[in-house]
Image (tube, rainbow, N blue to C red):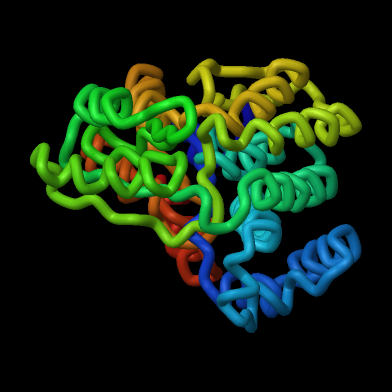
Length: 320
């Protein structure tokens, strides 16, 4: 289960998904650690492009292309993780939000870093190609319960015009995805139904809904070419919220994840039930830490996104 300092407290590692990226991410790890620089160089070679430059300098419209964003966040997350592991600190369980599930599987030893980098670049390409730009959309609905959002989805959805929950981020924050018209209609209806906010998201494709089926089929073929090992500690899957330790189940979960909702609320509940006391978030931003803090105040959240937050984390984690 990992050893070293900080193991008295039951710790989980979590990894963000798309949306956490920003221009400049990872630059100080690159400048500060030779091994981080070589990981960026390895990623550049694997991707056949200068992903380091895109992360550090942008421009933003290049960074937010799904096929760039996905490897950018994964690389940053794994470098942040390695920077903490240099201090002999590890977890007993991990999870990631959407794309972050790949980072969690790298953390658990199920996936090799290089395989994951290539897989998420392909995942981004397949997701982008699955639905022409402008056909799909996503919206965040804040202040309505899941049952209410599901009710609105089923009253609006038709076979040709679907909308469904895509991310259950918290008990009162549900992201929906589907055809643009249906998503826009749902956003309006949600406001009438008493939602505090309904916000159309600046994404280029409708993730985690059945419109992603073409991407799921291609991704399945790609993931079948990659080795998935047994993990050194369990990873909670987005699709079933099960703690998974064997490679085949992990692979299957990543395939099914493409068209299925991200059950993050259930993941947080799993951690609470498992008596996890501390969550460490690796990668850009601190979206997941924010969701955990609102969900259960008793869990300590420590985000690590740069050397400053790393040093702060180490000082907390090394306290006797």
